[in-house]
Structure formats: structure tokens, C-alpha cells
Image 1: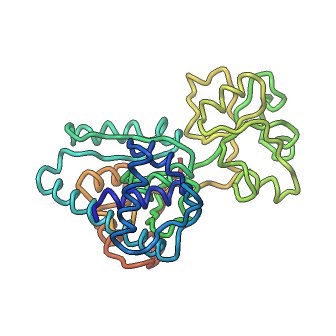
Image 2: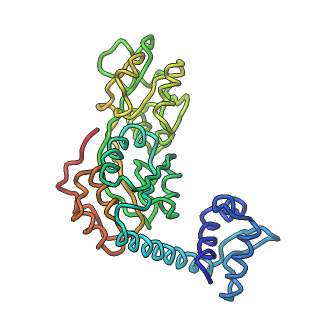
Image 3: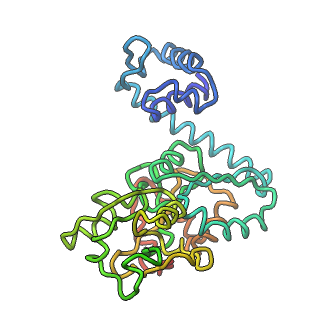
Length: 324
């Protein structure tokens, strides 16, 4: 048994039993992955995956237990490596962060500048994606931290901490009927096609819920994961754009009109996530404190000391989260 085999069975399970996709993601060959899995099954004396010909069809009952233990072992091994690196030289190594495009474009640059000033030899790696992609990256251990508003709460092996709340705004062209100004009315907005974020589309989204509460049906003409893409199609006349207020840049977006939407859409909460049992290096403490000042080292140490699914709410009940 070796760590490569444990990584392979975990990756195959997380990639929907698609061995080809797993091999591509791990930069190896499909026969190599299949061979290592077979060798592990032979050594353990049980089947981890059921097969139909060469295709994996499902995870066996024994396989579910083995994969869960394998993933725990991989986390512990990673923790060991991180602890060794921290003691050897806390100012080197890699810090990997996954976030939405909006976070990466409008929030993180100043944080990164401050962190790099203190850790000039630290290798920072950023991954952008939709909420589901971000969640997969942190649960698989591909990144240390994930920053998102949606899509993280369904993963029991993640710890979620509140960072700040953010508001939405509507952007339109100067020739749009809503550009005349005045207080934005949701009924008027419902009469026009909308361009907005992918995660704003769906029954549970803040945007659709606001319309639904008034018995309205939004007309989503186009959805994208990036505020700049939303604004691009607003400029092309596709519709009115619903974006994060932080994504408005007065000089760059002077050809558009900004409409305050804080009274029609409730604020959303941005959270940071990391795997349970993570070892925190100094750079992680410092990054989080820069990103969300209420996440001090003492608070983070308290969170890291909690066992199982102990509630985190009492730690933040008196915290006034910033509003962007």
C-alpha cells in the first residue's frame, strides 16, 4: 500500500468513477491508475469499485469505508508536510487559494500585495471558478483555502467562517429605460431581460427569491461567472446587469449607469472554507486576518481546536461583519 494508491482511489471517487478524467487531472496514464487500484484491492482483499468490463460502475460498501479512511490519511500526511515546512522556513512554500472571479478581481489584489510584502518568497497560487468548482478544489485538497458566497455549505468535511457581507447593484446602458434614475423598483426591473451571475440563477438564489417574494418571474437572458462578462453583455444591449456592488469601477464603467439595489436584494455573505483537521501555517493566519480582520489568530486557533461539527455561531455573534 502506498500514498499514490490512496490518492488514486480518492480522485476516482471524486471524478465520478471516470478513470480517464482522473488520469488526466493527475498527469498520469489511465492504465497506470487502473493498475494501482487493482493492486490495492488485491492487497486489501476486497473490491473498492464494482466493474462492468473495464468501466467502474459504483463504489462498494467496503470501498466507501476505505476511501473515507484513505482521505483522512492523505489529510494527515499533508498536515505532516505542512508542519515540517512551517518549522523549516515559515516564509517559503506555497499558499493555494480558490475564489470566484469577483473576489479575485476586486477584493484580493490589495490583500495579496500586503501578504507578499511580508512573505516575498511565498509562492501564491490562485484558482478561479464557479462555486461548485471552488468547493471541489478545497475538499480534494488541491487548495488550502476557498473563498465563496455559494456552494460550500453542503460539504461536511469543510469548516466555513464568515468574512463579510456584500450588496448588489444594477448596471444599464445610458439609453436603457431604467437609466433615467430614481429609486430602483423590482417590478420595473422584472419587465426587462437580465444579465447576472451563474449562481444567481436558481430557486434558492437571493436574486430569484426577491422576485418570487413579490410574485414576479425574472427574465434571465444570460448568466456568467465573471462581473466583467456581465458588464460586457450589458454594453451590447442584452439586458440590465445585476452585479456585486464591489465590481463597479466608476472610471472604467463610465459608459454605464449604476443603480443602487441594496433595498431590493438582501446582502450575501462571503465565507472562507478549509478542510477539517487542516494545519495552519503562519501565512494562512496572516492571509485570513488581512482578508477578514475579525479572524484573528486567537479566533482561528479556537476554531481549529473544536471537535466534530461543533457550532461556530457563538464565536461570531458579537462580530459586526463589514459590508461591501
